[in-house]
Image 1 (cartoon, rainbow, N blue to C red):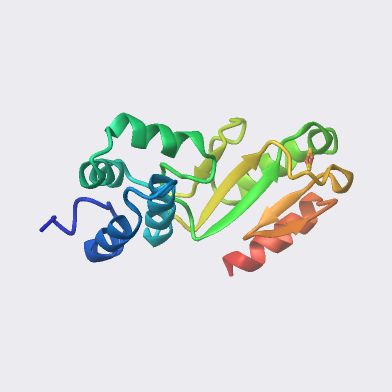
Image 2: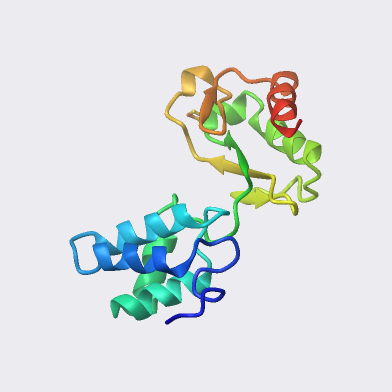
Length: 171
Ligand code: FES
């Protein structure tokens, strides 16, 4: 019986759930992808700690390097803990031309994230309340600059409006 505190990392659901997911999908076509997807969903902070990757490798008999490759290839997998809320700012050309860098920097400033000038793709506040991410293009360039907050898309965003939307979540 695996140690419930080790394999899935902080914020994870009990191991029995992980074992059930692995048992249901191991060996099936695309099974590894499904397992990782479901385990990330089960994790309270929506990520795949290294312990989880090791656990999956061990339980499915897959080399850890292969599990790691899958987890790092697809952008929807997170290797770091995610916040309860996500602000995703488009950094594509159209959005950049319409001020998305300022939106990004001001959002980070507002949330107390100090690495304002960094173009790091994902950064989470220490209290894990917010994650600020960037994306290459939402495919809605006509609405630039585009921002997604908790999966809701906002077009022609400006700093004042974004501050209002993010502020409401933080209340
Ligand atoms: S560049 Fe931002 S939506 Fe396309």
